[in-house]
Image (cartoon, rainbow, N blue to C red; front, side):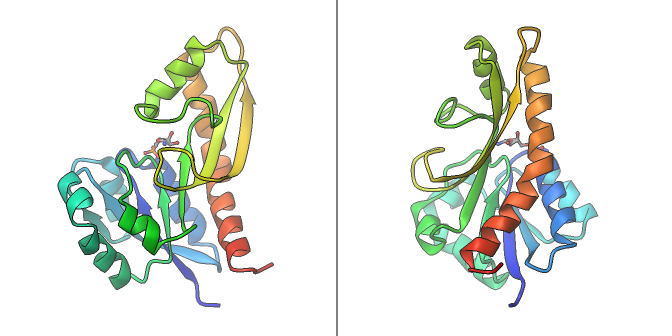
Length: 196
Ligand code: GRF
C-alpha cells in the first residue's frame, strides 16, 4: 500500500504537530505531507520549516468562505487524512464531506465532559480544576460538524489530586498527548484501511 499522506492543521505552538511529524518519519503506514495554520504567527510554522515540511497559512475568512481552495491545496499534496492538533477554528462542512471519517482531533479532556465552544487550551484545564475532577485525560475523536462530538476512538486518563492546579493538569495531559496521539492516529489509519 502506498503511504497515506497526512495534513496537520494547527493554530498554536505545534508540539503535537512536531511529535507527529517525527513519529511518522519512521512509519511505513503514513507520513505528514503538509502543515496548515490559520495563524501566520503560529510557532507551528517555524517547526514545519525546521523540519522541512511544506506549510500554508489560510486566513479565517478563506477557511470559512473558500473551502474549495483548501480542498484544492489538499488535493495537490495528495492528502488522505487530516489531523487537528490544537486547531482552533471550525472545520467547514465541505472538508468534512470530502474527508469522511478521515479527520481526527485531539481534545485535552475526557469528552463528553469539558468539550464544546470555548473549551480549548488553558480554559479546559481551568474548568476541570474548578469542577474538582479526580481524573482528566485526552480524547482522540473523529470530527463531525459539531464541536468535539464526533466518535471517540481513544481515551487515556490521568489521576488528579487536590493539589493539582490548571497548570499541572495541563502538564499531565500533555504527557498523555505526546505518548498516545501518533500511535493512535497510526492505528486508526491501519484499521480504516483494513490492514493488520
Ligand atoms: C493541545 O493540548 C491539544 O490537545 C489542544 O491544543 C493543544 C495544542 O498544543 N487541542 P500544541 O500546539 O500541540 O503545542
